[in-house]
Image (cartoon, rainbow, N blue to C red; front, side, top):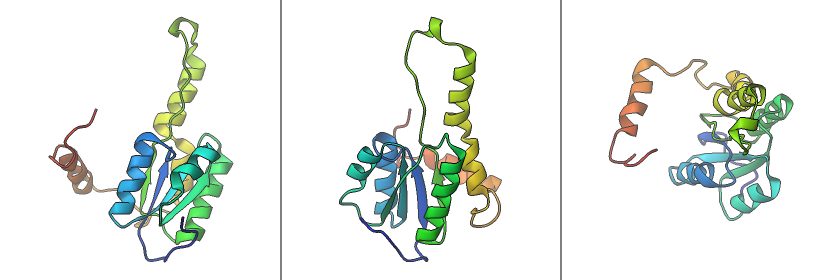
Length: 154
């Protein structure tokens, strides 16, 4: 596990990086030469996932907590000097009978999982080009997702 890397290396933040799609995404970024801030709220699981990987910074953070998100972004910027990619993979889910679920908690979970307002707000000042993706840049991502390299997505 790397605790400090070169400021010139591209850096990605991956939330929900302790397992599943988040961990697979972190590993793929590493294989592509990026350094990765692996973010998860489960400290034990996160450190287990990060062990043995080079070029990673495990950061324990609950992305539903604004102050933790701000601290995480500051930690990553201090570690790498830059943030080039952000993957909001962390999700919040409760399981139970739908008949016993009220709309308030569902709206909160959707805001945390889909919109991630705190992480987007904290990341805003660190956007490398100080702008969002252009139509052409976003179109390239869409074309990639339809390519053979993306082969199967649900």
